[in-house]
Image: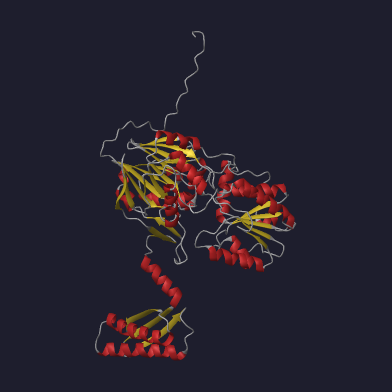
Length: 571
């Protein structure tokens, strides 16, 4: 009708930087290079390349395993990115966990300052990390976006982000539209129907992408072995409320410092039962400060220090502390050992471990739990108490993602090989399974065309060890030396080679060597020096003449194989 008002046309939001209209030719392909996160949980880093442009996703770290003495952190090798740095057009961050942004202070200085896109909390945490390592956030091109934004990276990559619930706010997956086809990257996720902040996953975007056609799905494999659904954070909040409400004395809670939703649930319970909340631990204080400043954490009163609450009645005290993984110098470990300077665990205290041990940390966590029991505390931890839930999807949630996207090709990611393989089997059991699924390792060069998906090569990958101020100067050989020193000990033989040779023998971590044993080592060294001086041997040969006989003697006398360090100087 002529007089009927025409409805205004809905204007589509333009992506940052424009839109690509490039059409791929029959030989064109996208290269996908996982430089971390494959066959492991940690060090997440992807590079997507089309022709002469690269998009980078995330840049995380991993924590050292038990057999890595002295190592602080592990970061991914980025030889491929350094060699192709002029092709990098942008960096997209899915969320603010350490295994996704923790390596960036080490990676950024090696690469050009391209735009780095991240949500508000993600960039807030990243800025804190950059400052921690002496870098100025203002020197980098950090661009804040929403978890559901659209961005254009270079000429070829359009990225549609979509919110996914996880164990940290502002978490996104991404729909990557390329000239070859659409790639869906779920990011870390679980499908929580009742998240603490009320912001559920935006699955409509996934469903739309699936309806349009998904060429490749890259998805979180962490809980691919677990049947059913991952419990909601609201269920954990209710259990925390229950156990905190029943606690007779002081309450100590440890969880991951970045788990803002879990910390919020603990604060809610503390406020409900009239407890003052104190925080202790560097990472806990840092994350909470940033979350408070940005509005992701809310408190009715304020957060206190241990000094402020130590004299309050026990039933008014709740302490949020670091140490969920049994780290030796964490607050909870020092409380368990009785070495904390300001507070001590006493009978009647309740300690809640609102976390699960990361693989490899089980023994350390169990030691802390046993010490807390010995001090008379009530210790509550999963699975006996429902005080923790994973941030990753279980099998029924993974099936839903597969059904929504119905990808032609599939790449399980973010998990050990067993997790990736179980996800592969799960995908193959679906009524519409992917045409091809690849389980790959870090550094695999994957080629994706409109009709094929295959591994075509390998680029340098693996881990660089961060030890103090050193990055990459610790090798596997050095770690083996450290392990040998820890297991077998050290024998140092210091000798002055001359007419009247002098020898001193010192052992550390070896055996409680008696005078006979060390005396024999000293005698053997003196004999080797006298013979060497008489025969005018070079110092290097004299060192060998000491090393090999002493090594053989100590092995026979003690059954052990210590590190032997002969130091011979000319007298």
